[in-house]
Length: 258
Length: 288
Image 1 (cartoon, chains in turn red, green):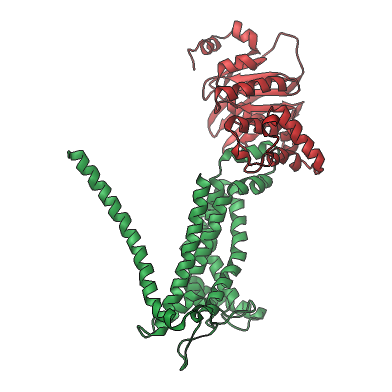
Image 2: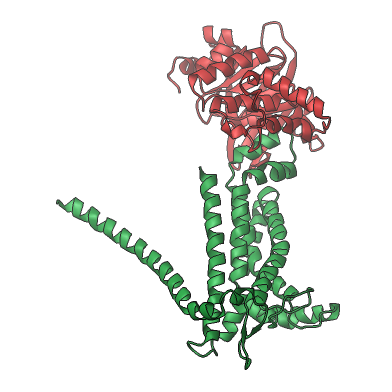
């Protein structure tokens, strides 16, 4: 769907994209562009396909038996479903943070350095720098700098989620995908993450799936509303909020579809 | 008391009775074995456990369990060295790589294999594998390696499925977290999932050891009968279980020999008890 404002650069475009779980069609002819250094929120009621779309972007559904797709998702012009794509390198550029914080059962330091190490960085002081700067970017450094070698599992839920964001930042991605990153967190931890995402959007392109409409309104620059596998409306957040074009969007925004 | 309370109390009492019954059986088994082994322990003293010589039917009998005890440990160790890595590799493949149909085939063959009676595995080893070992240089038809191969066949299904279960029980989000950073399936399985599954994997190791050390039929048939400490893979070995199984039927009731066999049983029971305790402790700690 076209956006009428001045157009920022496009980082990911979805073209005529369909997705199926076995026989069930989960995404129908999706067309949309995600912009560079913006926060795009994908919203919609449960089962509308928003998570499927997000997971399709960095191919997290590859593992699911019976999942298949048609159409294209282009990252900087390259088809991400290309068999020749270097998935490791691609996922380094397009990172993902999940609904449930997923700290690995190791120290905070090892969690953050996991990514850089698998991508071949061996120099110890360089890794230390990356760990420090990533934790700082994720606004977690001050809280954990004295206990980097403590188990990551000892952190609170909100800290764990920021650790996961730090871990994603540590491999220096261009795009960060977030799948309902705050739905398991309390309001204070949620607020910290929202502030963090707004800061990060200066340097990263962020795509966030959220159940929480007010959160989407607060932090996103663009908003995509999905319903039953269709992309109903896509525009800048302010426009959608002020004057939704589609009746379904309006119903969702006013709480009649939930 | 109204009707519901009576019903509730009755249920509670039933549960307590059944639970006490199983505890009672355990205590009785321990008590019985200790009682039967007391004559040998009081007559032979510490020599019973430290003595290397086991000649219970000689005119001047020797009742040393140490050689057989070490034999049990060695054959368990040898089997563990084979079966643990093998089981882990199978579990790893099933967890990380196998397609659903491949997993089905592996699972069904594991189930089938685990249902094969140990006496059939023993016969198979003696008839088909022993001659091959003979060509390779074995001097005894039955030897520790043959026994270990049998124990491997016997415990591999158990080990592999326990380990696979341990890995599968790790939350899927952990795997996705690793993959999302660009980790390969191998890397995610090896450095993240295996670490997260460590309590379960350790539990699998201990339960496997427990099973190997208590196994009787295969070692009785395939590992030979000499109560010596094996110095090479071709040497025969006589684990405690094999000694008990082969001698208990012919021994004079109430004799020192009889009692010494019960002492051997006590050793086995103690080992198994300790291993079970460790395993419980590991799973309890991990569930915290």
